[in-house]
Amino acid sequence: MLALLLSALLVAAGQHWPQPLEPEPLAVWALVLGLPLLMALRLLIGDRGESSDRAQGQR
Image (cartoon, rainbow, N blue to C red; front, side, top):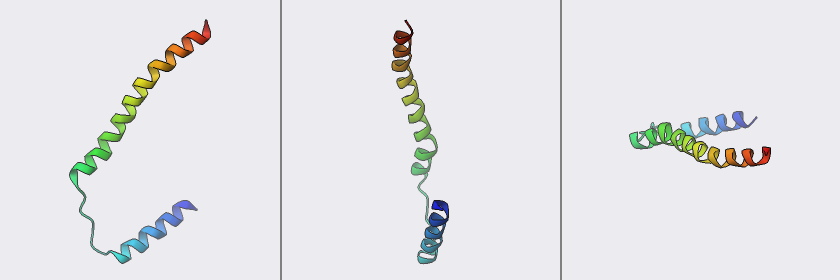
């Protein structure tokens, strides 16, 4: 249901603003590469703390 609503909003926006948007290369690269790299960094940093907590809990 949410996808249908989002689709309807995008169609309405496309009819209201018929000119295509010009994507900025820096913004595209930041979304494509930046977010996954930040997630990987977060997992690497967060995994160290959880590993030590698990090891202490098993003793």
